[in-house]
Length: 338
Ligand SMILES: NC(=O)c1ccc[n+]([C@@H]2O[C@H](COP(=O)([O-])OP(=O)(O)OC[C@H]3O[C@@H](n4cnc5c(N)ncnc54)[C@H](O)[C@@H]3O)[C@@H](O)[C@H]2O)c1
Image (cartoon, rainbow, N blue to C red; front, side, top):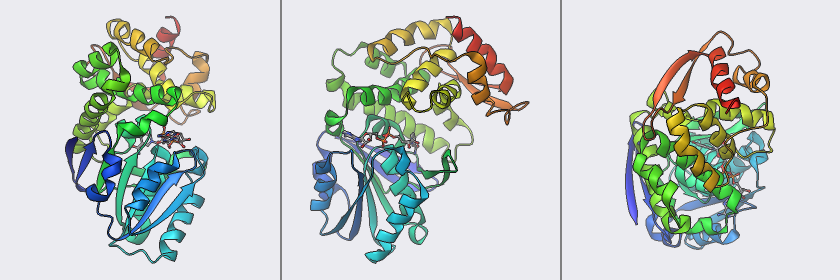
């Protein structure tokens, strides 16, 4: 078991990583109070049940699976449940699921009585590596992702790689894309581990720990996302445009994978391509430059403005390039010619 302390301006907490830590939820978390365990219908029920069984006064709330649940109606349903059971500031919400459950349950915990304790037990690779740490919570609104939300640091995060055994391979690999992104910008040794492993299953715990160390370090130095935290956007400028153009047919991590290829040097690309191939992640997309640019410019809202692009010249390092939004076209054009 590894314990990573995380200290932000909003408080300190521990990230506990290890196979089987879910079983120890009763001793690792303070469940001797009212506890609302939130999960979704696609997460194996036994994970939330383990936490519920360890909670003398616990209730279970199961959301319909999928991003469509990350909305104010479901948030309101959670608040109604907390109110109906008489939760006070001394009580707690526990998320058991992927990033959707964590973001929504975290936002309910952030807003109920101006904030009650929130524990996160992420069960997808994306949420274990990335979304469970950093304190961003919220819901989608008016068709815009994560438009409404709050920064709310969890009281503790339990990361159990054994929960990933039930995840399908495509979801596992799209989550790994975020790990590749972190390693490509910040940790060449972690990149080598991901690239070279002959058993992802065996090395998952080390990869998750390495990724979380990076995320933790970045968040500690830039909790409010004003500077360094933007490094986590490597691959996202073009990746978001691909995701929007694809209208849901590609996973987020798959779009980030192709987006990384558009924002790196030839040398870095030569290292990235075999890794993406190894994990069945795309290195290109089917859309033309004009289509992608319309999304980069948010249908012209970004027109004439500067944006920060994360560029990788050499694996394990990065630079911020502050460029006019229109200049992203140069990067996309070059990537389209590969
Ligand atoms: N807060 C942040 O910093 C942050 C960062 C990145 C992404 N996000 C958010 O995270 C969400 C995406 O997260 P996600 O990729 O985890 O998706 P998700 O939470 O929608 O989970 C994907 C699917 O996997 C299923 N699932 C979860 N755990 C499982 C398991 N162990 N075995 C089998 N199936 C399982 C779920 O039921 C769901 O159908 C988005 O809403 C995104 O905006 C938040």
